[in-house]
Image (cartoon, rainbow, N blue to C red):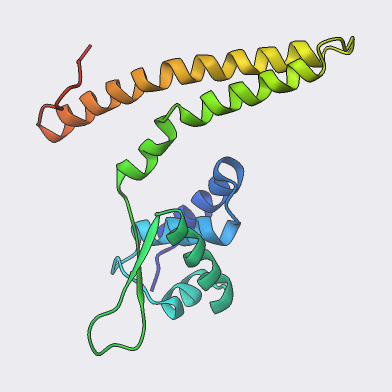
Length: 166
């Protein structure tokens, strides 16, 4: 049986996930609950009962979370139900420290600026400023990623290969 604190955490992470990660509320609640529940692996029925949601809503949330790499299912030999667990692997979130998307977006924004080069409404300037922001992010993210990896290595008591500590 879930505790009030576990459910409150799941609700808060659900609201955060809607606002910051564009996840449906139930997916955020599933993610939050799986992070703190006992046992750490839950069936769809367990999740539906704990979160007072339908099995289909929970199943859709689990499918979405699996697709994002944030959850995984296992099934023990002889069992007829899957057990779902959260993936609390920081490497999943390191994807956000990759610069490729920012480089691509900057190029796309420059194409937009070129299309409105003679426009007097300020759209060209806005496109160029957004492209510059993306250039800035593409420049800084690799540095942040390297800093993070060095800090993670210190947290784990190891030394990250090829990472220059500052």
